[in-house]
Amino acid sequence: MKTADPIKIQIREVAPRDGFQSWPVFVPTDRKLEVIKLMIEAGVTEMETTSFVSPRAIPQMRDAAEVMVGVPKGVCVHGPLVPNLKGAQLALESGADKLVVVISVTDAHNLANVRRTVAESISDLTSIFALARERSKPVMGAMAVAFGCPYQGDVADDQIYHLADAYINGGASSVILADTTGMATPTRIVRMLRGFTKRFPEFPCSLHLHNNRGTAMANLYAALEAGATIFDAALGGIGGCPNVPLAAGNLPTEDVVFMLEDMGYDTGIDLMKIIEASKRLEVILGGTLPGQVMKSGPRDPKLAAAVCGTTH
Ligand code: COA
Ligand code: ZN
Image 1 (cartoon, rainbow, N blue to C red):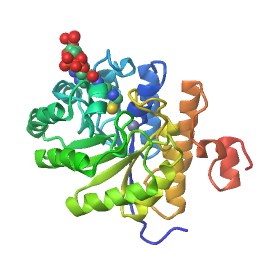
Image 2 (cartoon, rainbow, N blue to C red):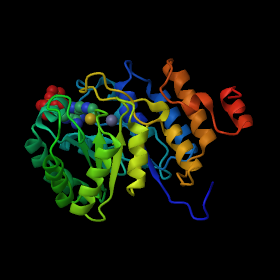
Image 3 (cartoon, rainbow, N blue to C red):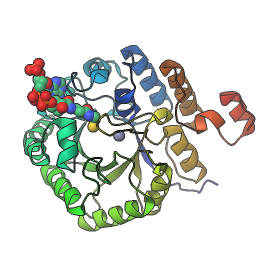
Image 4 (cartoon, protein in one colour):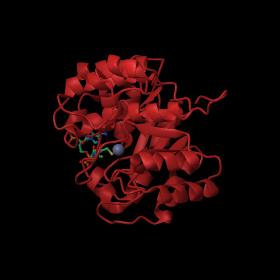
């Protein structure tokens, strides 16, 4: 099914932040580093490696500096998530290659998540961008709850554009439309991407898709058809937001790699190796993970039997 010149799709791996932050117990630092290394060996080239947030708010991320210092350098872009200037300072001191700033598009979620209104968080951006520029590091702007807020429901397009304007005018290299709550459907995704592209032509915009309502893979497909080429995914499908009731995981990286590669896209990630990494993650975490391809394996029955012990 491969075409001669496959379209490249950039997968940004978020399990080390989104996944480990929402796992009910603290995952030991050396185990986090082990999984990160396995993913890099499988071909992951960009990662949300950890987050520099208050250890009181998210105790699972209290080892952010140790994780950043321990990861293999030079082969993968490490962009930890930061909620404020202090996080940005700590991340850059620890060797971050880029910063992923997070602000929600609604006041209610931003207050629950980072204890600031949207306007207050936006006013911090000037100093964060200045610091990043000083260190020549790019900044990605994440827009949380872009497809629906667990407290305020529907989100107006203008709320998204307002935040996107702040990021883009401040100097962001790209932005992320995050369906933190899994409220998006393919129609909403396509409508939003078309509107975004019209307003910010050619500006790189990626998607972060949670599966709370079972629509994440359909949303990815719709985005792909609409021309999107950068997606977040999390090994084993782990993930969730502590400020979203009943949050569900992200798109499993190995499921995305399986589907995209079979459709003829180039993710640069080795399917067998990423399945092996997700199976190791399952052992480390000690619970069944949401990923499907890690259970059924690749299409080739021999390879499936080799990696999953299954014959379909
Ligand atoms: N990393 C580590 N510590 C931080 C920090 C950061 N980025 N930002 C603030 N702190 C510390 C301060 O130094 C202060 O410490 P002290 O009490 O020892 O002096 C304390 O946290 C309170 O600082 P303040 O600025 O008043 O923060 P806050 O209590 O209003 O909390 C956040 C704001 C953003 C730090 C906190 O809500 C947070 O970390 N949220 C992250 C939520 C998250 O990760 N959600 C999931 C990902 S989207
Ligand atoms: Zn998320």
